[in-house]
Length: 245
Image (cartoon, rainbow, N blue to C red):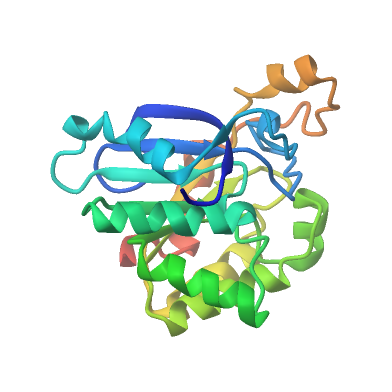
């Protein structure tokens, strides 16, 4: 039996978490505190729902009839890389069974310590795609918006490019916080330089998760921020060079 993981929930049928129809395993625990996060219930590193890689695969593989064509499994969170040992063991089972695996990550736990990197390389060998959640390129804004620096995250982008490992980039647009045209243009230039970006999506900020903050007693700092307009989204897409991918 592989390393135990701790999960929050499972979604059987998802259309926005990678290629085709995916079933999604949401792991529990995240080191970030993104102000626009719509799943604050996944933040604490709780151990209330333990699961082995084998058990997780058995639960998710029940939905295989949905995965016609290029579908498969996506592991999200929380932050999946915070449970790297479990994730590697789970990825190996997916690869052994010929199941496409995508990992939805913000990249926070990434670092180049030798033992950790060996495990991470094993994850890459047994995965097919990373869905990278880019918050904002500017480190100062990143720290205010997310609660942490982004130096190691940018290093992860470089590392995945070195490995020619395919990524999709998803960029949440929060008006007044990370929509500066100069910064978006910098992000577009940075992503274009990597060579392994297969797709970029601009996701509009929304308030669908605010009720969770109230339920958990967490102050919601983006109160009063409105979702971006269609024009703002189109301009962000232009600056990020979305149509180039």
